[in-house]
Image (cartoon, rainbow, N blue to C red; front, side, top):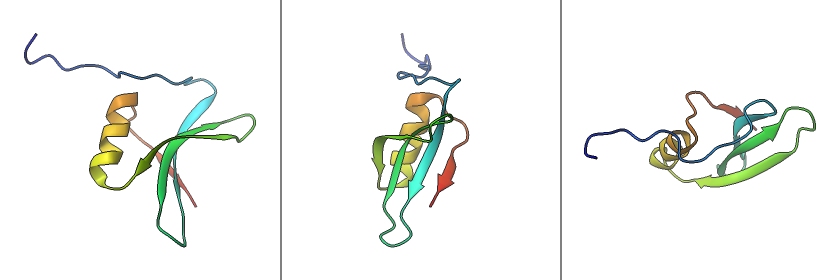
Length: 70
């Protein structure tokens, strides 16, 4: 009960989607989501306002590494 670390609480299709952080050059806005490898379609999941938001997104989905797109 106490002291147990929870695994990822949410899931995505690891075979067809990759985690991506979309960053705007003009405004600096960052959106975390998943990009379909076949079609290139981006599914936005969370607005990232701070490092804490990014860490929470990565923890929730069990992501260790995320790429940036501009």
